[in-house]
Length: 368
Image 1 (spheres, helix red, strand yellow):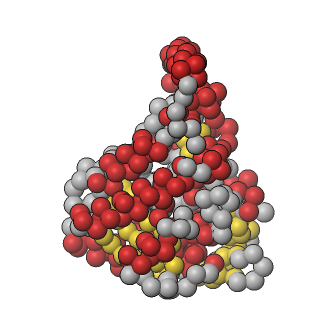
Image 2: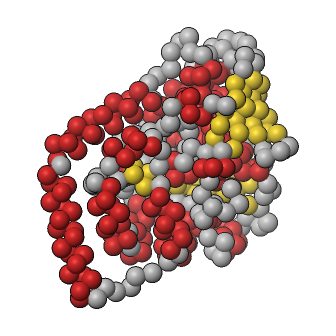
């Protein structure tokens, strides 16, 4: 980790930063055009599904699910009566997710989206986890009446909103509804809404986040998934576009130049402190067992929670650091009182305006 900069390095950095800012200023008009193209692509990606939608369009809705780093680590195989969601290990993140837990949770999120979409088009779905091979999710499709649930309607509007929220509390009735909606076999949801325990979660987030930022391999992997401008995001249609987090956009070469100086432990921890303290509460998803089937079910539970929150006008965002750092997860689990269960996912929730929507790869890129 870089702790200090020599006078020469600092002078060079300031000079390069000035050149970079000049380049950003010069490219202002082109940046506006790029953002317009980005927004058009996002609107098309999240267009409301047609009444006569086929399975390919159901796949499009499935890919709008939450997933780690927006890596979209899935493949789909479809026919008239079934759909299969397969893990795409070429899109794994081995540093932040060494056991592929987040990858399989992402598949669970996608399966829930697919099931709600199929039901809305008269194809009631049953989700089955196949423990054979690498772990696939089978979705059996039936025939029946259309049911456009509030969860289905929320799919194109759900997003992980990485901004400060307004601090407004969530009503008891809405909290109970979130808890009820998230019920999936083998998964329990812990809702934390009081200030003191939320501050304790923040302590764990800061400790784990600090550990991650001190790890050059983690920083390198994260940077590989960051998209600094609309053109870069449009080219890959994946990753973490800075504009979706309310961060400034800039030419890719500028982002690569200044990233390590801007992405510091202090600034990152300060940002998380503001975000968590402005949130209405924290949701923790816990599995009865630590295996792939339960990881998938944790993703299903989270997606149901996220869609219900969206339908209620709420925002949400992951703060998974305490479960991502192996040295910290046991202490966090003990504090939570989860015993020998697996603490899967941690998210904050509350109220805030929407940010720009993230992109997804074309359907043809995820079909096999």
